[in-house]
Length: 297
Image (tube, rainbow, N blue to C red; front, side, top):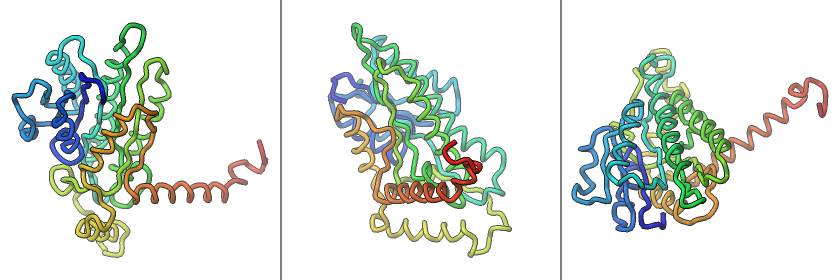
């Protein structure tokens, strides 16, 4: 983010990580900012009289809305505008008993978390891969905000996990499609607990299913643990949105190789490490079956 005309494009800026990052960029006079939210009034914390800041209404579940948002950015900053950094942060949590989820609830969650991220990413790639200075591509960085939920699967958030796992696998695949000449890099951000507005409009709940109501059920135990963690705050390893925003900014600005995956927070790092170590143990246990009795084949 060092060039004077750097333009970060951030989705989901109404609260949490997106808002913290938008505020961080807005306070740096050398940067331009494209901040998006489903409703522009949710971006009222940003100034209206700064030509370096564009506030755009964006519904990532709408193909036309995504297209129109990029068109608005081009019209505002001019035909030779540069898109250097994109942060896909739009999304919300859907929690509850999976058996009780409706078709509409489950489809909208995946549409927002996964297809929304995919739409914005590929539109950004289209812009970045055509942006050349002489014979050199300017390139850019796409940050897709996943979660610890993209690494592990816990009870009571199946469709949220599905969306984040989809983002991770999809991003890994798309990153491998890029020509090295284009200089387009991807980074999957995997935070653990963050103090965001997940108790407000960033969280949806499935109507409880009576078969899972007993306090001894795994999802009920996890809910109890999460509530205790929310009260404990930082003591439970929760991060402030500002911390995550500053880390994303540093990754984009440092000019070094961008990591494909970045677990954020001690909890995310340790739980992710434990997940993969456990997976390796499980693989060793089924090795003979996997090889179908033919060692080395």
